Length: 450
Image 1 (cartoon, helix red, strand yellow):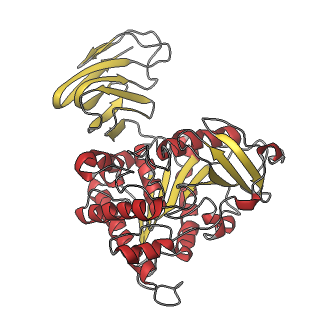
Image 2: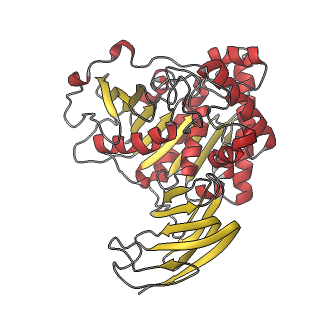
Image 3: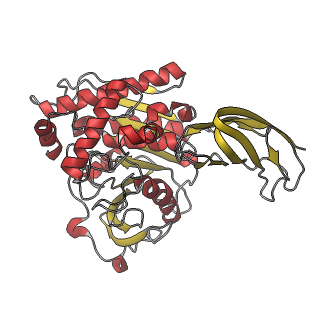
């Protein structure tokens, strides 16, 4: 409801959120020393996450409050286990995100997640994506880490900490084939940006009334800029450019987190999109200007993203329901419809035979390959394409250090053209130095090895 008021009062494109949320751990939290004693279910510190409090709400449901230096203050994670949660069996994980002004408990309290997943053999993990139901994180490590909210390194928290923390605490399928990611509204953006920036982690991704285009389409970019500024000012209480930075000085950062600019990274991911026009549908009892207006805006972003995927020849399932507003009954239906498609995605091996990845980051690791760029710009586009045992193509500036996946016999000699390298390491990986130059340059590196 706060987001609806913000939309009306600011008279800008404010919205694209979860329309409020309810409940954190509240009075249910108990000290960690009284943690769940159910056999096989114990939440302990790991991967940079400290468990503050934990509560067993039912045989399936657990509420955990955690702390991480990446955020600087406690946040909540709600976990739904499959029923039964059998010893000796491992389960895939669905990471499921709320929207603006939402909380970790939203999907179970408002989105029907308990019932939807009751007969699905999957662990459902629903982390906070903002502090105390505020405007939300926008699923990035903030440019401004000096606000009153603290460091706000949300991508680091969700991807580098929550995912391995879950794998160490629960009986998961701890590989890409065991992970799916989805979310509503702002959380739909989160699901798609994480899937695009970390394609080797998630094999299936879904957006429900989301905003998967925040930069590529000029209209979507204008709307996203206004929305994010409005949520930062009106709900987060911080300066408007705290998350991604100013468009004038940090445009490449916006691009580097925009799923629509990163579609090439999604060729091996099962993609699923739900949207509607904002017109009243089967779950609406009367006019809802806020729900209509916000859904209309998310429709623009989702449709633009889908069009970009089609132009690139990347498959997706696109559900334009036409009738429906930006409200929970529709997202609950979307989740129910997504779960069978998610299970099909999880059953397929979509790992690419040849690796390609595009990024604005100076350093990154994907699919077992690592690239580190020594260049003038902190953020700038680079691309690794067609990488396999025979070599790779790299585009960028400066000097790159490329470490391959484990493709070769340890210690074996190699012949490299287009770069310089020594012997293969004991781990079967080869490190190649590639000179690129001051201007964006494309270099093909060939590797011959026994």
